[in-house]
Length: 447
Image 1 (cartoon, one colour):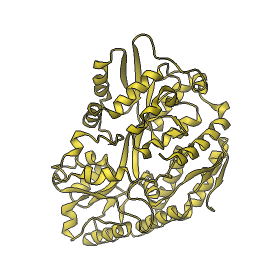
Image 2 (spheres, helix red, strand yellow):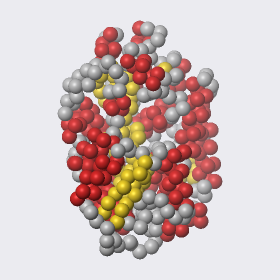
Image 3 (cartoon, rainbow, N blue to C red):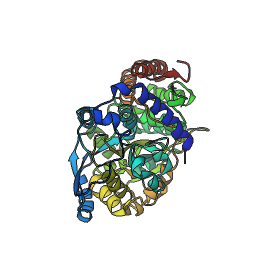
Image 4 (cartoon, rainbow, N blue to C red):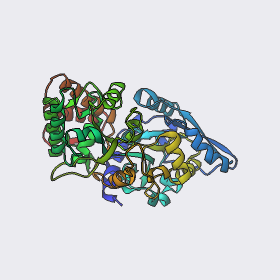
């Protein structure tokens, strides 16, 4: 158990919550974890679950059929800051909202700084820690407190058209320098070709590559946040991507899984995508390519970092205004560990990688015809899920940082300044925003 990391996160978020106590949303949210534990209700209750997973109700219905005392109603809540999160924060401020909400891992600290979540350890969830991967738990725990239940993650791999790579006599790259060599060779074979697309409005892949390289953008020293966006691993990734942009190795006009990207992959002018395990479902939407795809491990950074990283992933968090946290905890443990639920979520909701180390889903243990008979989930993503950077934690200003990095990549994509040269400004901006929120913060590496 990564108690040291949890302790660090606990000190950071705890300090932030104390600093922002006067800014907490809603009266219920402000005091939820200081009030007495709410006992389970005497009679039947209905829980509301805000999420953007498609057809989540079909999963809830399996539970509902066997638990007449606790019924769960799934309500669609749009993804993103302009959708579901805005609604959640507004509801908390008004003292209402759902019992359970889908919250991405990277947004959980933002909710913690608003005192918006129930500590599920107060409702016995500590008894269930052995049912989840340690790396996933470390992103939802503050000390011994549990502020979200991991529901799915996105361990990363390299999806590629095997037939396209064979035309130039290539194999999947084992390292990122080999990726660059392959990208050059593929482009040289036809000026239309690019190995991968890249969405310059979304810095998520850059963040994941830094995570894989061993960066720790946020850590703490006592009650002080330490921000390090200019350290060695991040600079290495930035320099790598600057070179790739300079050599025009990415197709920056075609973001992965966009309509244009799908057409380019179908005709073979884009050959691969480095993404989360959930990318398999999107790759399978590329018509006329069944049997031609394979999956390889994520390329490695030479002499540093980790075998994989994660892209995407969500938790199920109990909002601080819920009147039934005990019932919600009971349902969430079932939802994330029962094989019937996991299979239904894979089939009906399209979830990413299961957070249960004991069951990845029946369909994910079988060879895939679409991927040429490869049993890629067990070969690639089972080890990738356990090969994550243990020092990575998300900041309480994820949205602001993501916006700042998006600006950097848009500038770079139009011939602007190098990514590595912009990092010091992003670090200073990040520190300034965190201080404005009342947090104690300093730079970990010089700007």
